Length: 393
Image (cartoon, rainbow, N blue to C red):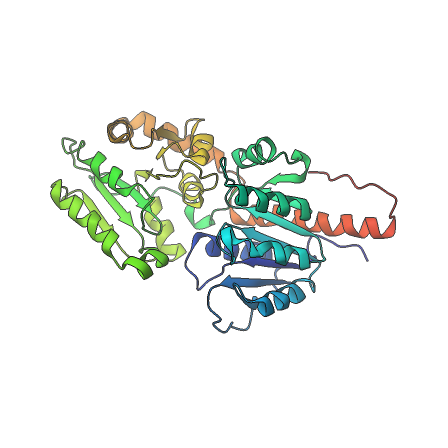
């Protein structure tokens, strides 16, 4: 019987809620989009990867893999081989071992067609990180990235055949679409996501020190809970350093904090209420940003440091990028967007046009079609072993 897009079964490997991280949120959204399109999630399941052996709730999570446990890994492979296809969401450090090398043992044990989604593609990997990516690329049937930059890195830095790579953008909830909810006299600049070092928040706060002359005064809202790993190791000490910086600069009337972990409805409403989204990340390697995708999906102008995904998506006019660590340049970019109504409107229009096709129902269909193609290719090889298979993107 021919496999169809609507019915191919998929086993996902990822972190998953209630774990709080971007990878878990992404996988939940992707699986939900596929299930929604099919009107059933009965042939979808998740092997949830973590460092504890908490029990799993009956439903979408079919196995909780305890990272580092050989017995648990064997069970994970057994479960996944019961699906027609497997999707592994890859980040360094999710699995056990140096750079999460345990993932290679799992891939070796999987016997069904497998797609690897790279959420990180390093331009300057260590020798071990490079070896892991090389092995995953060798073993997988398809490789998925969420940006052209990620695809170019895989081909240029890792020598991977571009015909084996699919670029499927990071999805956005349809709640982020719709009319602007901007209200009030004071413009709202928003940064959101899990809080911790590396997000560039101190640079962002310092940038507002150069904007105290603006009238009316802007509001800069930093929304999000402290990252669970940061909180586990350091408590709220990092957040407290942000409070101290705000006080030292006399910016209590401008900088605000909301430490809640917002659900999708609350977050979408907040983003749609913003005049500008600010992404001051320290990373120079980030080829995927779900926050950036959601900001653009909400038709919001964005000011971001020049991390790769921002450079790619904002270069067409949906926002401005600034040099990492250059507080004055960041302040100038924020000033331009907040004071130039025509520029702000043009950026919003460009963002809206760019986001067409980015919402989760469309992304789910594209991903499901990819997995179906893999299953069909395997069936063709089994039926006609001497016939070469050419993937059609």
